[in-house]
Image (cartoon, rainbow over all chains, first blue to last red; front, side):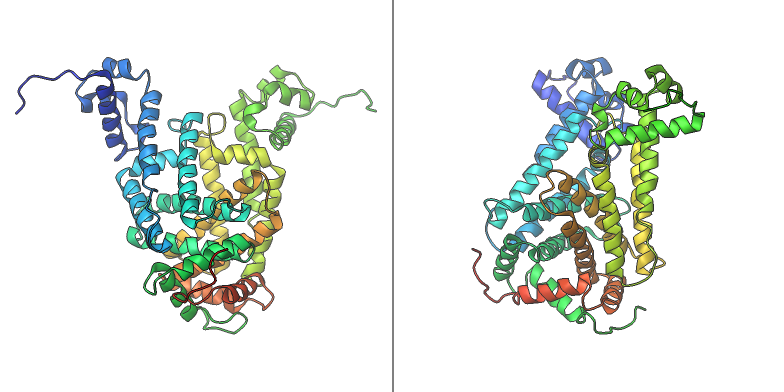
Amino acid sequence: MTTGVRRRMGVEERKQQLIGVALELFSSRSPDEVSIDEIAAAAGISRPLVYHYFPGKQSLYEAALRRAADELAARFLEPPQGPLGARLLRVMGRFFDFVDDHGPGFAALMRGGPAVGSSTTNAMIDEVRQAAYEQIVAHLGVAEPSPRLELVVRSWVSLAESTALLWLDGRRVPRAELEQKLVHDFAALTAVSAVYDEQAARVLTAILAEEPADGPFAELVGRLLALAPAPGVPAQPAR
Amino acid sequence: MTTGVRRRMGVEERKQQLIGVALELFSSRSPDEVSIDEIAAAAGISRPLVYHYFPGKQSLYEAALRRAADELAARFLEPPQGPLGARLLRVMGRFFDFVDDHGPGFAALMRGGPAVGSSTTNAMIDEVRQAAYEQIVAHLGVAEPSPRLELVVRSWVSLAESTALLWLDGRRVPRAELEQKLVHDFAALTAVSAVYDEQAARVLTAILAEEPADGPFAELVGRLLALAPAPGVPAQPAR
């Protein structure tokens, strides 16, 4: 039921359409498996016309990744209000929304490989990691992170990535649980580094101080204290 | 002070020599920056002769990576004796030895990119990750890991990778501290998942039960209990 009149798109509009079509296809199959022919067909234009806008698959792929990277970085933005645990949990919810929406494209990208690994794509991935790092640091209220606190935050960002990738491979654990687990992991990794670093200790103290009794960190600490016997004391044998 | 007589090497011996020379060069500069000419010069043979043994830089690179991957996987082998914390700490020591010895090559490889990212190299990296995963699981005394315990171990392997990469970038934290921190991180991540998963809880209980009072986990728990106020209780304000 169309009018038969196809409106001519401007250059920028057409490019944006092609990027959207590509991202849609990459959400169900790896970019390796998606051809320019399929992208052309899905956009309702000819293959040569796709090449008119994007000189090769790599340039279309990079443009699609640019849009996805900007979108992902934006999901780490969170108002600096309320307990940190709740803020991080909202960020993780939006992160998993993104991973859920872009599954195969996200997995292919993070795993690298011939079709997706280039200096340009690696630089974009690093930009997103950097944006995530800066957002988290801003929430910690730390102007100049110590090398150890920097390591906690950056390695936690990488933990979130690898957890999402492992989740995509079979989805055997509910994502809501993993979102909460990653917030707990953040507290746990900060706690470990608090042993080595005064700044990490201050962050941990501040996190726990502003945490409501029903917040995610409080729940974790309560359950752990109930679970863990004092070290050196014989516990129940593993079943 | 040579005799002037150069012994002819057999094919396999020459290949192994070239792999060794390449790994040596990759230990101080990224494979991107090392030319076949340099490898030929360092091995004392002509460039065409290098191509006789390896048809291109990629094939020499992959052979070098094969040797390095086998060597790295072997470092995760550890006798199943003594407390788990001490075992993991020895493994981390050998892992950081490797990272230290192969710095720029390791970093280039893990970061991917045009010269180093291919299906072959990615498959080799995944093999090493899998070997590390299987070794750790074997030490936990678990025949069939639950999805959540699998996630803990695999994501910890990825945490060890990213921590090593961040360390290589400036070496601002002593490596001995990071080796210990990663063992603590393992306990902390297991503890978080123990809240969600009975198998992880059993592993945590077993770890703590066999831990000597002066072991790495016991030290962590003691320091944390001293540090963390009860949640919901106002703590010292962050300085």
